[in-house]
Image (cartoon, rainbow, N blue to C red):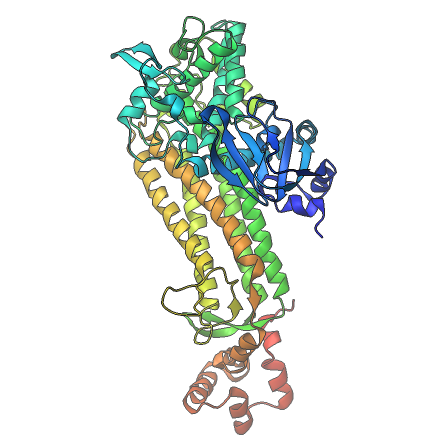
Length: 617
């Protein structure tokens, strides 16, 4: 029977925990059974527990939407992950559909454990945001947007440069978001499907509000309202309010204004006012004070990439460890190495898998280098980098607050004019993702070749069987996991091209194409992270070796003739190989017939193990 720590280690949300930390967390969980129909948590009440479902099913619904079920969760699913971010209210209700056996932990105690390790906290927070993203994706087809519809008597009127426009009365977004939703129906992917991006904007807004308060631009009350509203967004609330398409014109202004409006309207409520009562907290003059989309958007994108990169690196390190474990498992499995798809010289299967581990490990270093370029930001540069409308001292203060809020060592760019139009940090990081994709394509191609057959191919390894392979050919099982990873990598390479094209499209003091850069890079990171996890869990960990087949290739290959070159010379060795291929005789047989070597020499020189490790292990 699995221990609590072992169960925790299988939950993606808690895989960031080291062994000792997992044991510590395990002591916080207790077994709990919920009867069918019992409420596990209710919307509007404080988050207080993390629930790991072991058996049974749980229905998630929103009471304000007429009790319509949104989704059903089952074994290994997690409920209440937002409790790791804070004790904000639940915004859904969970009811046991059947008898549910679970492990339950107190949220406050879990947060105390995370507070003791800032690096771990950032990684777990990132995983929570990823889980919320998956949840939003699963809910997307059902789209709970009843409160956002324009119904008679269910609107408020807002005004901007272009005139008046009705906005849903219950919406936290405002007129500029509404216009963007009308204008940019492009990809069908709303920014709500990138909650980590939205959370990064909220963190930037908190830092900006505190800097503006210190500089006397906004009052302390407004600052506190902005901060409280932004923290709710960071905790995963109000995601449905961010419906602007991720691809948009305007250099990201629509996304920035979507964030400004939601924060302003929620801050108004928290301050005791009505939505749209902008006299007390204004989207532009307060939430966006001393800012421009041209410094906020790239800064939020860099923060998102840095946070996502930490999770990606953690997943890649787990993939490297899986390859390395197989390298150790297969260290004594002799096989033929191949060049040009032809027999070369003997090696071990373990050496091959260790090479896979090292090739990915090298790309981790590249991603770490690329991520460091994202630490230079242009906050305070405002529109073109001159700092117009930002008070003296604001830039240094906002950067310092952003350091404190995020834990990343951000630095103000040396030249804000140059930094405002420069996107090379995005280009460089995307290029490292492309490089990793190229490496993974090669690895997956090798896995497919090595597993080809099973009767008429290499058949050196067995990939785990994941699904029937054909709708017409009975018994066929295909290497679907390496195949899907190849496709992931193709997409990442295409996204990198889009990033490069967008970067070179910069004109004068701004690159207006940053939204497609954001969409491309964030999709690439997510796909690489999911792909790496899929490759590890559904393929690498369960690969087995065909020892006899590998040895058969070694024993019947003329590739071992290479070891004779230092003794017989290249030309005689070539003639010997040609004769073996022509006659079908073995090399050793021919050597004995011709009396070229003594038995002791044959044993010493043509020992496959010696050829695999000519310099010793």
